Each structure stands twice: as structure tokens, then as C-alpha cells.
Length: 613
Image (cartoon, rainbow, N blue to C red; front, side, top):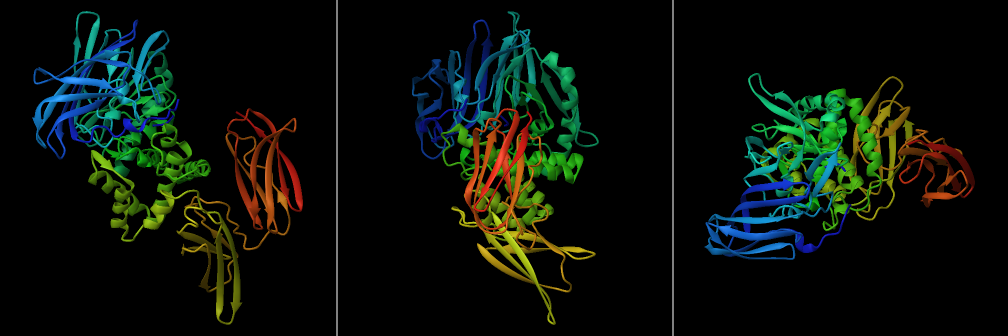
């Protein structure tokens, strides 16, 4: 999902743990003028461990429960504290299937990102759902837990005959009821998490394509868009076929190949990866590829809980880069990674979400998305392309149509790489921040040959205190260069490399495989103080400010508006001598001219920059 946030009560999660859901059938009639939902939900389940005669389903209090029925018997139920507590007609033993049907009605609430919305476009109704992470119970009774997937689902939508009701899976039947309403019967035969079930209704224009995945087989790719928008969107929609091909090559065949893939336009600014039918508010290449890749990472394999949301969002963010690389080449991938690295540096806290009661925490853009994606870029750099993509395919196969955790992913990678990766996952998923390196080198050239001395130092972090990582060095000679890899596992570490000739230069991490702070790779400290012009300039939203100093100093960097008002304190800390790049974001600032001033113990300088939005 790419982007109203709220805090949630602890008891909304993780649903009733006494049973497993096997099947859902949603049968909803949705009207406008007045806005209203009338429906029923059938749920089939089995007790997990012990025999049970009571269960509950999650449903918000804004909706009215008329009755609950099982095998023709009306069941005793209470609807309190967003739960429908149900007494079954008898005791059910473990793995013995029970069925209940809840009849309910009302005007759904809308929490989170807009779990149920009655809207409009060009004077036409536009009704849509977006249940992630906790919004499904705003509009239908369910077990609200992403780890408990139903084996299959039916979704029947009754709406005005002037509109179309769109949902997951395949459209099995369309029934014109003769009363001005039409029922659309959708069937999802693959396992599905409750938050991925969606209903979207409007007067859609249907644009049909096909993904030919073998010489004799193809799958429908169906786009439902507002009629007035289709001409402007067609070029963007056409790129979906190439995306399906690239991701199928890298990750394995599209996981819902027996059904469809498609887009349905809705009234939200981003996108949401509803299984087989992504809901889209915009159609840029980044968003379209992001939501499509979720069909593998998020839908086929779903995070076991919201603590591990990076397994959905980090993977989808990284997959944007995989698409750019497959479509436009390695330079496009590198450009994308550089952009995401800049954003990832603003991440605070661990990628593992500590507080899953906060939607803002779960879907933190810099942390769950950008930094999560960069973790995969770094992992690819450690294990190499072959093992990286082999491991992703194995992860998707082992946990197909089920759920996984970070530890499950780590086990797959360790098995293929043949080496322990605890250090990597512990510091990057459960730790915070990123390494900030100070790097110097010198050469001892005597009768014993050329000895290169590398000195690598990290600023002290909190968790971990420093980062353990394999670090590449590019050693440049007069007519050639070579790359070696050192394993940096100390905060301050020296390495000695025997060479046959004197190097001209040594560059740390030349291929940008590590999320990091500034590296001084000149081999020597700068001889003077300086503040460079920011780049790019003008900029939006990010730019770099470079400065240099020959000795340790207190560094203060401030940004002012044209009236001399302080608008942002960028930096205020002690730093060793060196050359530094600082990222500056224009977030929250209007377009215009600004001044940035560097204050050092023995130096002060101001330069002008421009934000252009």
C-alpha cells in the first residue's frame, strides 16, 4: 500500500484465537441516497486446540446485528465492545467444521485510511473499502487477524444497475435483479487474509488486456477506471503487462494466475494491494509496480502480524527498483536506490514495529517502506544476485498462500548463503539508524612491497553500538582498479592489504551497497574549511549540503528564510575532521529562497538555495 491515522485499542487485535477461519461469504447490498449497507456474512471455521461452543467475530458498534444463524438454528449472541459474541448450538471438537451466518446492517464507519467510504466522482457514486490494517470490522464481521487466512471466499455485491461492483477473484455471475439493482458474484479460490477482501462500486469503464505467460496460456488483466479518466490513463495501464512479466521472471509466476490481475479506481491518493485487484488512486509507474509486487509480497505471502509489516511494504518498495532495473537498466535501479536511501535516513526506531496499535507507526514511510526496501538492497549486495533471487523464490514457495515472519525470511537466506546472517537482521531490522563512517588510508612502500593500511571508524550508535557489515573497497591504480571486500566487525578497525603497486586512490563502498553516513575516502583530511553549494538546487524535496573541516569541531547548520527567521536546525553536534554530506528535506516549507549557514569553532559561512515545488 502507498499512501487520518488513529490509535487503536489493544483488544482489537488479534481476533478470536480459539478457531481457524476456513471460508467467508460476503453478501452485501449497498445503496446511496440514503447511504446504507445491508448484508450477511457466512463464516466456516474449525476449533484450533480445544473443543468450543463459543466464538466471537470482530464488528464495530456502528453496525446493527439482526441475527446469527447456524444450520437453521438462531444462535444466542451479544454485540459489545466491537465483538459479536456467539454461543454455538453445540460443542464442536477440534478440526470439526462449524458454520455461522451473521445478518447485519447500517452505515459503516471509516477508520484508518478510509475503511469504508461513500464518495463521488463527476457526479457519480464512488464507494470503496480499504481495510488495512484494522478496518475490515468497520464494514463486515470477520476474524481480524492477518495470520488467519480463509481458504477461499465468495463476495456478492448488489448495487444500482447503473454501477458495477468489483471485488477479488473471478466474476462468476452477474444477475440483473429487475428492481433496478444488479448482483455481482465474485469467487476467490486462493487463500486470502481478511484485510485483502475489498468492495468497490462505481460506473466503471472496463479495459481488458491479457498477460500471455506461456505460448498457449494467458490471464485476463482488467482495469476498471472512471470513464472520464481512461484516455489519460491508458498508457500507464498498458505498462502493467511488462511489470507482470518482469516480476514473474524474478519472483515466480504471478501467484493468482487462475483468476486475474487488475486495477480499480477509487477515491484515495495512493494504492492498496487488494488480492487480484489493486485499488488505485493514482497510476504512476512507481505506484502501479509497487501494488502489483504486493501480489507476491503481502498477498501470496502475508506478514504474520503487523510488527513485521516491512515484509509487505519494504519488499514492495524494493520491487519498484526491480521493475526499473528490468525495464530501463541498472542505472535506473541505482537512481531509485539513491532516492530511497535519502528517505531511509530519516527513519527513527527499528523497522520491527514496536507499537502496532498506531497506524502511523505501522505505515511509517521512511522506516517500513524506504529503509525496509534498502535492507533488501543491502542483503542483495551481501549474498549476490543469484542467491538473492533464488532465496526470494524459495521464500515465496515455502510460505505460499500463508504467513511469514522476519525469522522465516532469514532462515531461507541462511540456508542458501551457507552462513549465519544474525548480525545483519539483528542490527537492521531490530536495531536503529545506520553506520556513519570515518575512513582513511595510507601506503607503506618499502623493500617488502606495497602495504595498504585502511583505518575504518564508526560513530557510536545506541542499538547496535556499531554496525557489522562486509564493506567493499575500490583500489584505483594508474591503469586499472580492483575491488576487495573487508568484514568490518569492530567500531574502530585497521586492515592491511599487500599490493604489487602503489594505489592512486581508495574508495569505500563504491557501489553504494550500504545505507551510511558520510565516508571520507580521500585518504587525507581536508586542508581547509569550506561550505559547498547544495545539490541539486533548486530542489524538492531533498538536497545535499557538503562541508569540510580539517579538525574536530562543533558543527551547527541552520536554515533561514529571506527575512532572517530560523526555519530549521539541521545539525548541532561534535564531528571529527573530514568532508561531510548532510541531507536536507523541504518537507513543511513553501517554495522560495532560503539561506543555510554553517557555524564551526573557527569558521562561518552562508549560502543561498531555492525550494521549487
